[in-house]
Amino acid sequence: MTTQLIQRDWQSFMDDFQPLALSHQFLLPATLAILIYGLRYAVMAGVVFLMASGGWGRPHANAPVVFDRQRHVRRELVYSALTVMVFGGVNALLFGFGLIDRSLVYCRAASYPIWWFWVSIPVMLILHDSLFYWIHRAMHHRALFATVHRVHHQSVHPTAFAAYSFHPNEAVVEALIVTAIVFVIPVHPMAFLIFQTISTAYNVYGHCGREFYPPGTASHWFGRWLNTSTAHAVHHGQGHFNYGLYFMFWDRWMKTTDSAYR
Ligand SMILES: [Zn+2]
Ligand SMILES: [Zn+2]
Image (cartoon, rainbow, N blue to C red; front, side, top):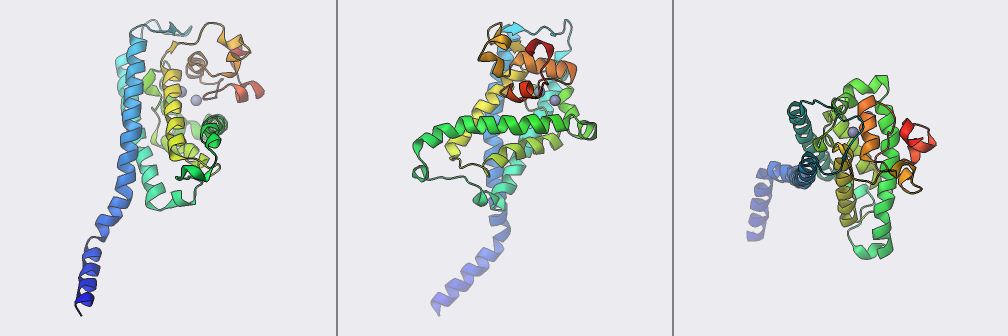
């Protein structure tokens, strides 16, 4: 009898707190994602922005003489904050609805050989670059540009804070591109975290308005395959060419490089 009473009370207790449990299920992953993506971005973009402002690296050839940077930075910061919120929302849905359980994410390190942990990181970079190249080109199509990608290109002379300066529509696309990877290959959460940190760093560098690679990188046997801040500055300045993210493979194969890279 007592056991039945306890069971009944426990059931009614759980029923009362059902909305709380549900919000917890969505709120926790959203909060964690916002904290991780937001803090990492704020620190990396902040440091690189200060480095670029302090004259580190070389200016790009298309660097403006006069530039109302403050107004542009304000817009980039607002859209970057929105992007971090969107990333939080995508993670809330992914974890809240249990979709992540259908992915190939593995938490037991012993599930795959240790070499795969390290190899999965460059594999993720190559996959991300490939998906990004083709989806980026699609976003430049007339049908999609205005509603998805124009906000990012409002930064004709981007700063480090342009790295996440996306319209929310594009932020969803960017989040889904990265999410798709864990449904294609087995990924340990720690390897994913390293991959995303490299991704943020490279993205911030690509938009910072300064070049840190040595001169002649575009014609170097190895450097010619790397995307650079110089190449991405041309993309922002001209609105086409150099669609890649980390590499120039697809741009070279598809002949979408600008004249300096040909
Ligand atoms: Zn673009
Ligand atoms: Zn860009």
